[in-house]
Image (tube, rainbow, N blue to C red; front, side, top):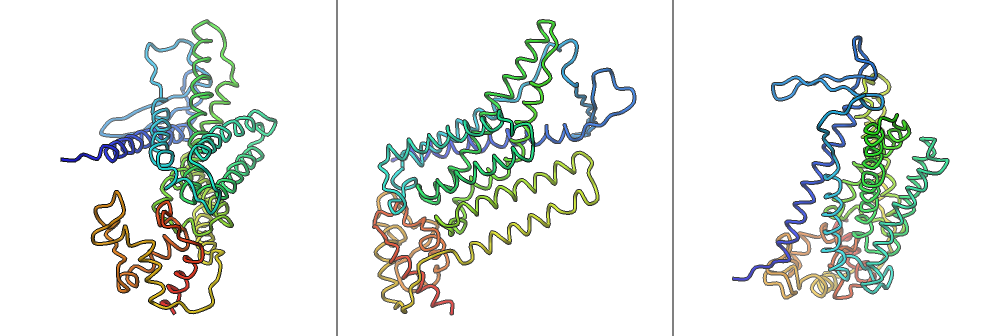
Length: 396
């Protein structure tokens, strides 16, 4: 009996990442909803800025929020931090297992930049750390006092990172790294700002002092940033399952990511506005805007910038390209190491196979260049262009 321990480790780490991410996103969404749902009512105790009533599981709940903190702390406080910490730790472990351990297959694209594995990994870590440091400096700068200016600065920072990453790494790695930069910012907000500020407030109260109200304001600002960044980061993290998103390559990849950021923020704004009791015109523009953004993304990717090939490509030539670069994995009996069956059950051994799966081949090997994985057969841009031309011929 042979147990492939690497596969089991990858599965368990990914499961942990998904579970902790659900817990973190769930608490984030809940507390943003709770904060937005607070209402001022008669009879509230001094220092209470609002309360919220809800019903769940057959029980009624009343939650109240203090402007700063109660005069006397309760014996037990519930903290929400480990969800964020373990989401980042498990996510970084996944990054290390897949993109660092498998750097030559997943991280590096020799046609973009001829990295060796160690410099590529060092660059990856530098982007994660640098993204947080740049973001934190923006928040602490004069821009941090102006919501629109700060949001614009953070948007430019992320889009610039997206452009740089698409010039250096494979598209799959670039999109995921933008998500990892955002996730690092969100987790660092919790670790370096939100939780420490809450501890400072508690320490001041314990010492009989008046807590600094700015501590809560700063933590609230970072928490709101995390809320608006959640939907884009989730979409970026699952982008590897939808390689058509990479069709823009080095020319348009950054623009696709920019649209993802705006679209996710607009959708999140709808729910935040709804939670605080907004109605009418305040809730009429977000979903139409989100639809326009997704249509703009689809149009952007419909005709990606690719080299053209005007001459007709024969069936025999197209099949030869696929048999050279794809059939070692996509076969009834794969000859490539690590494959016991054709990935996704797709076999590319005959002309009928290629014709049946031509659109998957177009998405994976021509437009996005995700396949062959790591390009061990050295499939060239000319090969991809000729294969794409043949596929387009079949669609005429």
